[in-house]
Amino acid sequence: MALMDFIKKQFIDVIQWTEDGDGTLAWRFPMQDMEIQHGASLTVRESQVAVFVNEGQVADVFGPGLYKLSTQTLPLLTNLRNWDKLFESPFKSDVYFFSTRQQIDQKWGTPQPITIRDKDFGAVRLRAFGNFNYRVADARLFHTEISGTRERYTVADLDGQLRGVVLQNISNAIASSGVPFLDLAANQIAFAQALAAQLVPEFARIGLKLEGLTVQNVSLPEELQKILDQKIGMGMVGGDMNKFMQYQTAQAIPKFAEGAAGGGGGIAGDAMGLGAGVALGQVLAQNLSQGLSGAAQPAAAAVRPEDVMATLEKLGDLKAKGILTQDEFEAKKAELLRKLV
Image 1 (tube, rainbow, N blue to C red):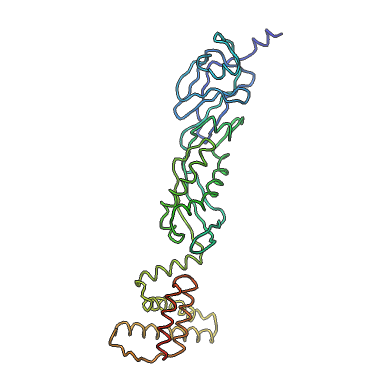
Image 2: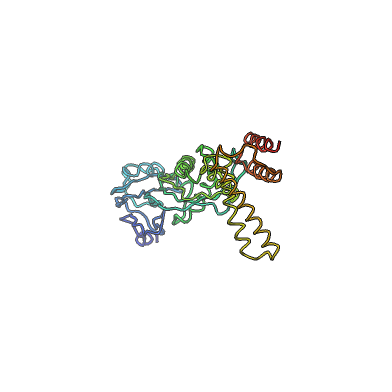
């Protein structure tokens, strides 16, 4: 009976793997009811690694090449099995192939806004997305830490874990990049470099090598985007507060005009919108006239208290949003109050 079982056994003469292109990272060679013939050939193609595993313990690892399996080419397995140098019988062993080529264009992103700390704004919420490339660099470590005894382990199986690793390191990357939060959108390369530096050791812990990472978009919260737009407006007028107020007035006129033209607020709303638009137009015209006349404008021009209060309210709003410093606000307030004297 034992002789018949031996005759019925199938012996493997060739061990190889042709990747099927479906994003497989690890594949177990089918060994059920079969044994490897002594002297069998092992073919490991470029961008592959083969690993022999004995009873769950990793033994010999083979890079690209053609090998004849014997006690000389399988020293670790020979030691684990306590074979002597003349051993030539068929044997059983689990054989795993790993793809070491780059897995490109892997997506990462923040499905929900994540909260990070910023030195200027405290806790803020951020959205970002991009892609990254990686490869299996240490097949032995990847087998023991990730893929294990599964028949097949794919890129899709690993996707969720890697996305989580990226998200966990975003806050540290922003802190280490030295890029102010409001400037992140304009410094995506620096952000990507800082994030990659955080991720390299995290990937290495599971046998992977991060080959590259990009940040394709950074979205600021709406309220901070408004502040950024106002800072841009300040830059357009060179930081001059009088010119900035003119800029703000000019930006507001179309909004009042839309409200007046829409007719949604009834006669009273139309009158208020039209009146506000006319008032703003008069303020803008007065400011432009003062800018053109320069020093020729009389120093003792009449200033209405209600105009000063309205301007102070606008300046207070700018200070609350962080556009003006406390010193700048106090200086402008003192200047306006002197006009009332």
